[in-house]
Image (cartoon, rainbow, N blue to C red; front, top):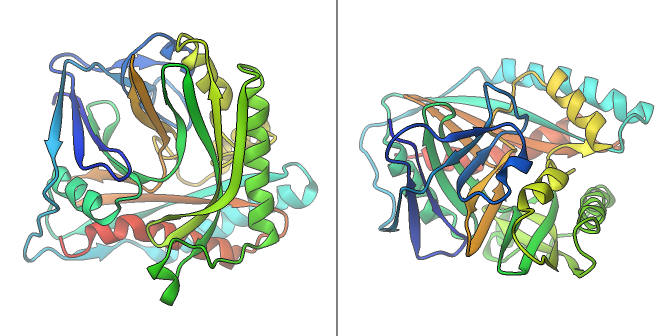
Amino acid sequence: MSAFAVYRLPYGKFATMVQQTDGEPAELLSCAELNGRRGFVMAPFEITESHPILLIRPDKVERVELNGGKASDGVSCLSGDSSKSRDYYAIDFANFHSQLELGTFRKIVLARCAEEELSESILPMELFLKACEQYPRMLISLVCTEKGGSWLTATPEILLEGRGTDWRTVALAGTVRLEGEQLSGEGETVNWSTKNIQEQRYVATYIAECLEQFTSDFSEEGPFSVRAANLVHLRSDFTFTLPSRDRLGDLLQTLYPTPAVCGLPKREAFHFITHNEHTPRLYYSGFQGWLGEEETHLYVSLRCMRIEHQRYYLYAGGGLLKDSTEEQEWQETEAKLETMRKVLENV
């Protein structure tokens, strides 16, 4: 199949299709190799030869009009083995949390994967259109390549965005599920716990330290509450200037993965995650988006769904601190999985 990506920016009125008409996407083994490149980027959480950074060459770029998702009759959703998934999560939580109690990490992110099955397969483009309709606040993307497979994503988290010398990134962490009357607002009535505030502060401090290596001209605003589907997060916005885009790959190499998807200290948390999580993350919690000469829109790959015929693998994670509890963290991942489960409902 020819490699392609179609994406819609938050609050966008149309989507953009990026196609590579022949050959396979470039395979890169470090973010630094993105210096001076352009195209649609799909990066995994852990970069390996089997799961490299994929760069789709923009042979054809066109605008796609959005007319909403199309429902199909008679398709039912069959859940996977949730009891086994819960058992695996309990084992992982105990393992990860013990390291927090020992003081090995200040924070570490634990992710999981849930499998859903439909009675018949649905065109991925139909799922993309439905996600665009349901989630106007988030980046929606569908990426299909031979090497990486097919991934649908609905993410609220900017990794790096800008044009010219003006750039921005965000520190996004902390999660509360909206319920009842809260669903009519933007999360402004949420009372944030000390755990959520501390988790978000870790991410913001880390980003500031990274930016200091590339520019002295940056500012931070926040944190404030932002809504994403039926969840609300704490976010701080960083704006900064860069003299050119020639070192964007180097900046990405420094920023990524942020504590929002990894932990602190970063190197040690990353090593622990890749050696101890039950399910490899693959392209979940990596990053993706358009890397261009005039403008760039790169987002962290959250709320992901890997599509394999009639099977759909949904990914979610949450940041653990020393005072985290297993049931509370499990419920947070369930709330995050709802984002993609709702795309599968009534299709």
